[in-house]
Length: 149
Image 1 (spheres, one colour):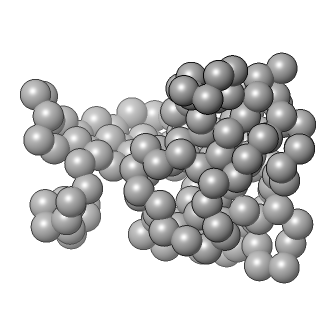
Image 2 (spheres, helix red, strand yellow; image 1 turned 90 degrees about the horizontal axis):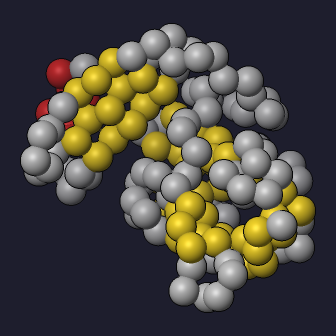
């Protein structure tokens, strides 16, 4: 825990959220009331098996109305590396034109060697995937656009 906090203090990361089967950790800095909170979290069912170094699914990505009309932006809830499929060589979670439903895994963000499945917060159709597989993403970066159904 101490090493993690030291790493955060020496980086540009403003907020970090981690979840496990029996814990949830949120750390924020440079905000009005910085806090670290550990609460029991309900166990999350994995939609697909991920590599052995994988961790339980993280919180769903925030979605916000896009300036592109009726489209919704799926944003990265953390800094990490974007992966479209559960493992190398496997089919992507979603493609352009895929119908998705609330709670469905849409991609993986790898952060600090932990694989975090991102789940859709809405049902709809994937209109555009804005990030290439295997590329780093920033907090709140738009990953894909979805037309709600």
